[in-house]
Amino acid sequence: MISRLLVANRGEIACRVFRTCRDLGVSTVAVYSDADAGALHVREADAAVRLPGAAPSETYLRGDLIVKAALAAGADAVHPGYGFLSENADFARTVIGAGLVWIGPPPAAIEAMASKTRAKELLGIAPLDPARVTESDLPVLVKAAAGGGGRGMRIVRELTELAGELESASAEAASAFGDGEVFVEPYVEDGRHVEVQLLCDAHGTVWALGTRDCSLQRRHQKVIEEAPAPGLPAALEASLLDTAVRAAKAVGYVGAGTVEFLVADGRAHFLEMNTRLQVEHPVTEEVYGVDIVALQLAVAEGAKLPPETPAPRGHAIEARLYAEDPARGWAPQTGALRLFDVPGGVRLDTGYASGDAIGVHYDPMIAKLTVHAPTRDGAVRKLARALERTRIHGPVTNRDLLVASLRHPEYATTDRLDTGFYDRNLPALTTAPGGGDLAAVAAALAAASARRGRFGGGWRNLRSQDETRTYGGTGGGPDGDHEVRYRPTRDGGYEVTAPEGVRVVAAAPDRVSLETAGVVRHFDVTAYEDGTVHVGGHRLTARPRFTDPREQTAPGSLLAPMPGTVVRVADGLAVGDAVTAGQPLLWLEAMKMEHRVTAPASGTLTALHAAPGRQVEVGALLAVVQTEERPEAQS
Image (tube, rainbow, N blue to C red):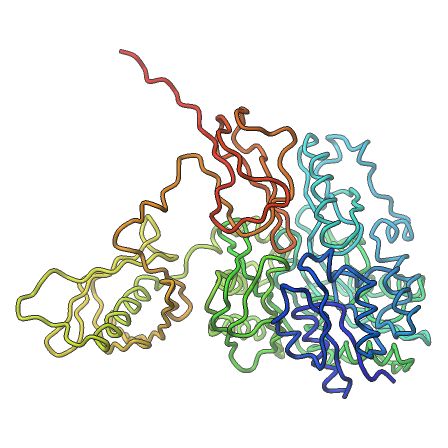
């Protein structure tokens, strides 16, 4: 019997495993990097062991240190979670060799299936030879052999880009998984990403816990997942389940695993088998009424699964809440998570709580919100409303995108449920939600009420010009700003003069009620010292009345779009070089993803402040490109 378990991971998945351990009466041990010293998973564990350093290569990818931590803390089992070392056969052998229980499949099964190249070979599917790829093979997908989560993956549509993308994907895979092996395969455009959840014991029982659809993805990383996969023909679904079971039996699989497919034109193309727990396992748990982590532990202890697979019920949908800005290339965001509050009736899996900081070292996922309902339509409506009501103050997130995605006709009706969803719809989905002007009015009046409470007064016999407040945010005018004009009234209230048609019902520092077109709406307002104001679901920024000259930058300046580390600079790049628009100049790594910084226009590189290994903050000056000036026409 397992009595003390160490989770060789961090964040949300560590907290998820700890929750089951508490239910089972198993004590827990966390490991943490220096960047995670105050993280939620550390606070929730019964004991914790420091892994010195911050980078994954120094900490969560150091299997030797993790095994030492388990032994030092008196653990008798290790759960790898997902990512990091979860599909590393050598790590599994090290755990077992130390006399610890490994919560995962046998190392031989990991070797057979965890590497996507070897898994394809086992099933008779050969990857493309990069040296022999021709124009007729395009588009192709460069893919990391180990790991997942969209890291180490690149779509190549131009043959001249293949070599560079192979190098970039390999570097990203090595950083994320400790294995830089990549391969090339044909890229299937706009198929459905469908997978089968497996659970196997050591006595020959194999459960196929239905299907999941994970087609809504950005950068090859899943955003919204659901179970069961809707609209699959019965014969195709049966084929997927049968193939998954046969794959598991072929390698003597034990534990939880997932077989992934790309479905296009009524056919299923094998992608890979993930020999670990998947991020999206909660939707399967909700539909089948099981705790997959508890079953993982039971199987590791030698228990037999019941011969019959549990019966499914209803529909479940999960949305991943990320600290990122979808409207700006999915750029990851960092900073203090000042408030995080999810309404009741929703399953919450998270590694963060109010007051925690979102840093640059790891994945930007904040949480997963999962709902279950008798029907798919009911689950869609329930999750969209829950996300709307979630209060999240701090970095920009993809919350509004998730709500818009769930309510988009293509998703709601499953008319075009495929991996091209965001390629087709992102501009419309990132259009600002309505109500920004009213939110700005509420912010302005809340601020005025706070000042009045501190200093008193406000109304004068000789009326002066209106008070003016400007807020930056989504859904504003041409420049994205909302201008509000108002004046105090004799009765202690306020009159709004712009925008027109707004009557103030009540105003307090934390709540404002406004009437427009006969409808009264209430706004909860929270303002922070840095000028950020959260009004309901709107995130606004108070604009200063005068521009600080120190914030001006030279034309052609390339500023860091996010905090991160410069991982490389284009070969031979030097000040004085001529560059062309769109030419890659350098690469930043932030939150385990690599981001390319390109020349904004053709011209001359007049400054280069980036060097490999340098850590930069958002807005840091990386380089300057002086654009080519056309001579004026002479008369």
